[in-house]
Length: 399
Image (cartoon, rainbow, N blue to C red; front, side):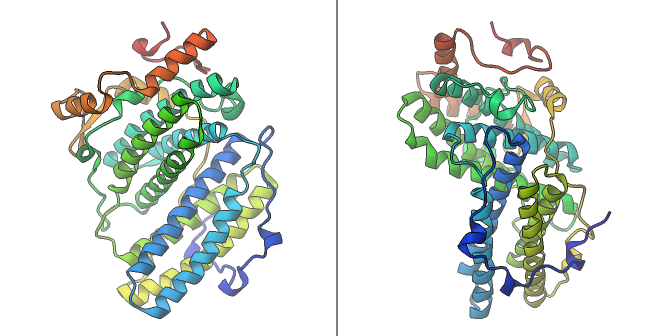
């Protein structure tokens, strides 16, 4: 079935306001929910926050009062959507448990998008980031076992393996080597624009989450690990946001944001296994269809263009959370030793990379290495979940 958001009618904006009872959503059960339901919730929270913040920045640069009022009205509804989505997460889950879910999102969402991306340069960008988020999951899983005495398979449910990717200590790079070449807004496939916006939004929310929850821990190793990985997420946001063509107008960006929200809510409505959560995805999709219509009108008025000039005529295949174990193992086996140089990728540690590493790590091992050593000393071995056999790289197998 084809679905073109530009031809569908949504809920009129004046009927989208919800009262407190309607916003009081029932959270998922942390012990029985599908882990990918939790992943969809985390993803949509990041998408909604990006939509809200973009709308806010647009309003700050918009001289027309009527436009600012229109943006404020849709922004408030987006804010209600974000509250409904994020409040689906259960209060019983610890920060670390939610962190493992964030990294499962980063791993399986990025892997799926890398598999589907038609542009080779963009695909490489996603594969590069994939191996780093995959390693973060391994580091946090060892912290989880060490300080909460629980195992990560309870969270990821064996859908995602837990083992080393590109070692986290090798992720620190000079900032100029995190800036990529953008896609060309005039020639890029519509799906490529959606992919870039999706991953940028998800990584941005992960960065925000870590830099806010990290200081809440008392354990020094936990505080230090969150600090280290939060700085790497800063690198990842730079990496992904630089893929977006800076030549896109404000109104072009607005309609891309609204179209992407329609795409993801439709995707998750089609793939959701929890009926109550599915109903929220469907409701929000019908709200976003109206937001898209409003954005289309604003684009016509200010850019003098029709949205059909830049948007896909129908939604692509739904974004799907599913295991990517074989694909991730293949990328590990072929790209584990990559780093970046300028806007490209190399397999050798160049001088600027080595100098930055020496400065930021100093004379001690970073927290991401120490957390493995400390858990190995405490638990008798490091934590791994290798359901598909031994690690593809001999050098990263436990010794």
